[in-house]
Amino acid sequence: MRPFYILLLFLTTIIKIDAQENFVKINGSTNINSFQCINSKLKNEAYSFSEKNLPNIILKVTDFDCGNKMMTKDFQKVLNAEKYPEMTIKFLNFTRNQKKYIAVVEVKMMNQSRKYNVEFNLENNKMVGRKNVKFSDFNITPPKKMGGMVVVKDDLDLTFSLSIKI
Image (tube, rainbow, N blue to C red; front, side, top):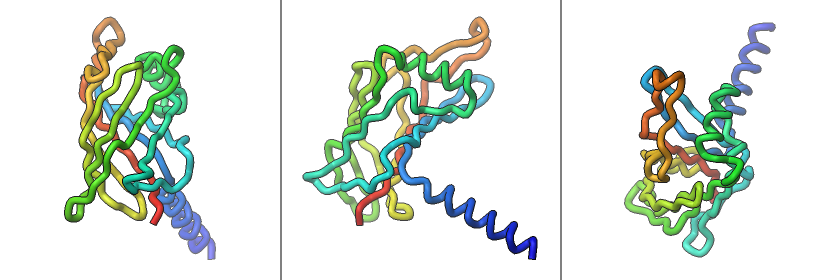
């Protein structure tokens, strides 16, 4: 009977992880390893992607968690969270092209704004999109640590996962 409870606990944990509603994730790397910073404190609501009602998401920079206190603090420092506490992701256009969805998304942080074409897929009632961006897109110099021995690469992978209204 005990193995059954362990299996039940395992399955409910997997379902709970998969049910995580909305998040924005930033993946990056250094010359030594990689890092991931995630903001899952978005409103757990279903977003509409109709032409008249596209999402405008405001994220607190301090809500990003990199899984390590020092790394999270460094990430927030690089994004100048004290002076620029918010990052905005605004959907300007959203169209369907065969089985894919294409959005024009404006990302604004540190008083810098950039527009990107982002391809989204519908996965388990969520719009999931990924886009390669760069620190330099926002006039941010990738940081160096330990006297330049650890160098953060300019390239970042930005992932959006947003629940949708069906």
